[in-house]
Length: 591
Image 1 (cartoon, one colour):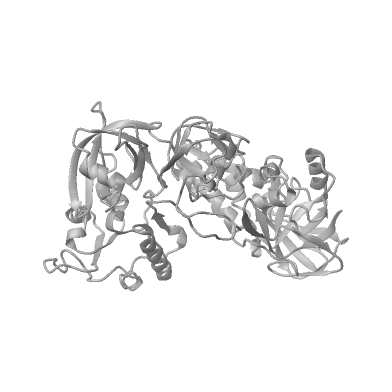
Image 2 (spheres, rainbow, N blue to C red; image 1 turned 135 degrees about the vertical axis):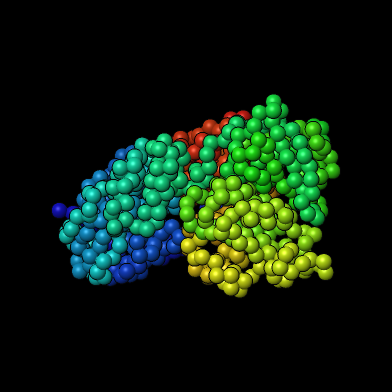
């Protein structure tokens, strides 16, 4: 017989952590007497980060006394108190390898349904005083699980826990947790898990992504696309940087020019995917620090040569060097095509939405659609100041003419007197939410957006308001990506910089953050690559900080890393988990 040993609650509070402040509800304390459990939580309880915890599918967190005993032995500790693992219900029984997703239980006058395993994040390690705890919970198969409240009611410590129905497929919490977080998953297991109606929508989305990846790869999928889109890029066609020869340089508009690049041996280059980018390592000054920049492929995917297109920034060191000093015949150091902002297969309509030089990756997508003579409905929407600043105008018109269902809408914010309405542009105003609505775009379209950050945010909101699902809207960022630091209270944003207090002078491998334009020598005192990025205020993304969640998975443009600890599930080939790795050679990261 399973028993409810303790009901634990706690309201979120601010806690000092690593020089920052995190807002967390992981500190729970047992209460006496009956407590009402409602749809979203136990009376008196709260969650600090509703993106990762709480909500209807994660209303109540359960952890077992048997796991308490296990961790006391494993960690050599005797200081645990009830609520130690951030759980609402401490129970005797209900082990993770017996409880199944979809099981229903009655406790007191309330009824609950098991929806998913615990999602481990750094805060359980913060509460435990054990930084590796998130990884340990997964690797040892003892995550705990969440309950959805079917019938609200009163519960009290000491009450019996009665199973009133069993979940279909009889997949245990431990099996489900391993399916998402650990290697060795299979297509039949994924299909089995997706037949469980009680499984939370978030986990269904992740497992569906894994299943689709398995199907596309014929059972040989690499990387965990269920945890991160960064794993969706195929392995790079070559390691690090290789020399490519400039074969053509030409203007596309005022301020935008293109370079065509070919192999040095005359062989066709490995094809990139429509929407991917190249990374260049430039050396404007002999002996000086290199400049590392990424530029989208703008030409036809599968062509023998690559074409990139560059905006000449007024004070841009890299774009100025390319524009003023690079000539036809010169060699440039180039990393293989990378990126997950790629045109997806399918029959759904396509919206290609851009402004300025943001046209480059979606132009490659338009090339791919035109080459395939795609019957899909294709909308090309672009915003520019005027005809002089409108890149690829003739090229786009020619490509759209090859599509049976191609449509175009060009918005000039300040057209010139010789710009022709109905020919050079469609609307004499900026692209707006009203225009998006008035165009009558298909609501089942896949949309790809590239341009300035504010433009992408506005257009994303406009498409969502028009009725497109957020999962169908894809954006590409040229600069540093936005940070993900769950629960950490915001502080003033600083541009990337060298660390204020380097831990030592002993030289190590050079670490370069390509998107942030920063290179510096490594020192073991930094700890991990994530901690180095944080010391430099390089925007970073993380959650578990122990190699479990893959939020930190990052493209490695050049070099290798070593892990300590080893990640629970390896990242995709060509990527690294920066939260638990260190450079073993000179390293260039797409951060």
